[in-house]
Structure formats: C-alpha cells, structure tokens
Length: 202
Ligand code: GAR
Image (cartoon, rainbow, N blue to C red; front, side):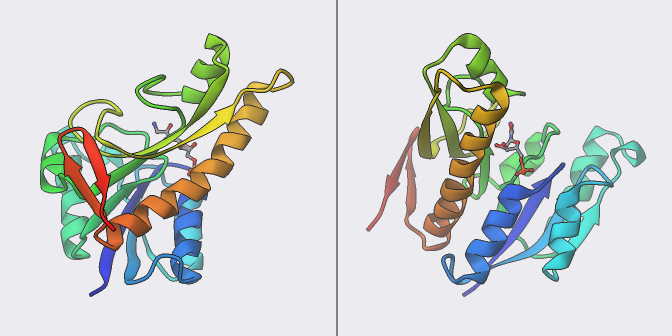
C-alpha cells in the first residue's frame, strides 16, 4: 500500500525537496507526495512540487476567515485522500480540527533542540542565547506550539566563528537528513507513540 502524503509549506521548500528526493531515490518506499499546499502564492516550494509532477495548491488566506481556511485545507487533504500530513516550513497556525483529524499522522520539522527555542526564528534564538549546542527536531504535531512527541533530533555544535547564517545553514543540512528519515520510519510503520515517548519498532 502506498502512503499518500500532503505537505504544507510557506516558502523555500528545501525540506520538501529532501523528502521528494528521498522518495525518488527509493530511500522512502511505498509513499508518494500527492499534493503540496501553500499559504503564500510565491512560495518556491510550489514550483519545486510542479517540477516533480506534484499538484501544487495555493490557498489564499485573504479569501477565508480562520475556520474557513482550515476547512479549505481539509477539503484539499480529503480530495487527495491524504494519509500523512507534513509541515515543512509552514508558518501559519493550524486549527484544532486539522490537528484532531491528523492526530498521530502529522509531522513537523523545527530548527532547534526542542523544547528549547520554540516558535519563530529558532536558530536566531539559540545563537543570541549563547547556546553551545543547537540542532533540529522532527516531532508529531499536537495542539501546543512545537510540543508534540519527539521522533528524531540532531545536535549541531555552535562554533566560535559561527554567525547566525552559518549556524542556520549547518542546522538545515541536518534537517534534510532527519526529515526524510522520520518520514521513512513513519511510512514503514515503525513509530509507536507511548505518551510523550516515540518508540522505534524493529
Ligand atoms: C526550516 O529551517 C524549518 O525547520 C523551519 O523553516 C525552515 C523552512 O525551510 N521551520 C520552522 O521554523 C517552523 N517553526 P524550507 O522551506 O527550505 O524547508
């Protein structure tokens, strides 16, 4: 059975690209991205999707009230029969209904070692805080902000010569490794949530 994936994006889409390549190269098997949805018309991620023959949908937040926007997303997800929903640089709060419908089958990537530095500009937060170790996290999405059960984390040391930009770049390299890895584990049915803990089944 093929796991049907939808991806929510807002911008560049480099994590989307890493997952597309993971599928195309056979690292992630039995899965296909059926649709990419953006809240930004000019998101480069939409172009990346089209380049790979994936449906790219822009939903304009200006055309809906908050609940209506969520319903519009849910309609597209339903239309594409989505099994797994991925947030990949999606910068808009999600309504509870989507979170409920996709409970335990929605993942997010965040550029910090959660629970440190939640929210926007996590790399900048870590850099300005003077953290010696930064990193990234793939986690299940729950109702809280960047708070769902953690699947994979990767540490990235903050080097004395780092700027916010160089640190962000090195974190991104690790994101491109752990997001496809987490998707693969999900698709292979190897993730079991036990409370806050995600157990890897063999
Ligand atoms: C990534 O660094 C991702 O971790 C971050 O936005 C960037 C998107 O890049 N997400 C968040 O900060 C979510 N809170 P991309 O569009 O090239 O994948």
